Each structure stands twice: as structure tokens, then as C-alpha cells.
Amino acid sequence: MLRLLFWIVLIAAAFWLWRKFKGKAPEARRPGEQDAAPMVRCAHCGVHLPRDRALSLQQQWYCSQAHLEQGPGSSAH
Image (tube, rainbow, N blue to C red):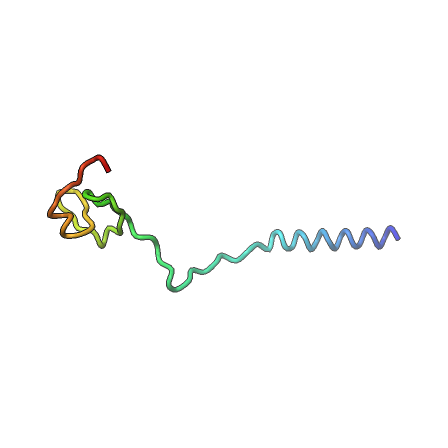
């Protein structure tokens, strides 16, 4: 009986170690998944948008042509 218990414990420990050190394979990125684009804040309204969609003027970013023309908003936002 003691031998049977010993073998059960040994097999369980081996199985546990095998699963622990087997580890997970690194997850492959999904084809549609991309890195996040750098975000900027509109100087007029404060909305955040991707930098490649923003308009720049004198080191400030704007979300639309109308906000670019209106210039920086008040700091009360």
C-alpha cells in the first residue's frame, strides 16, 4: 500500500513539474492587431487623437481645421 501511494505521489509531482516548466508558447499577434499610435491633445478642445490624424501649428496639435484656425482654447477646460 505504501508503494502504491509513493508512486501516485511521484507521478503527480512529475506531472505538476512538467506542466509548470512546459510554459505557455508566446501568443502570436492577431493579423489585425497593430501597435498603438502616439496620441496628442488638441490645444483648443483638449480631445486626444492619433498624431497622424492631427494638424500641427507652432508646436501645438489640433483635431480639426476649425480648431486650428480658432487657436488654443482657454485653460478653464
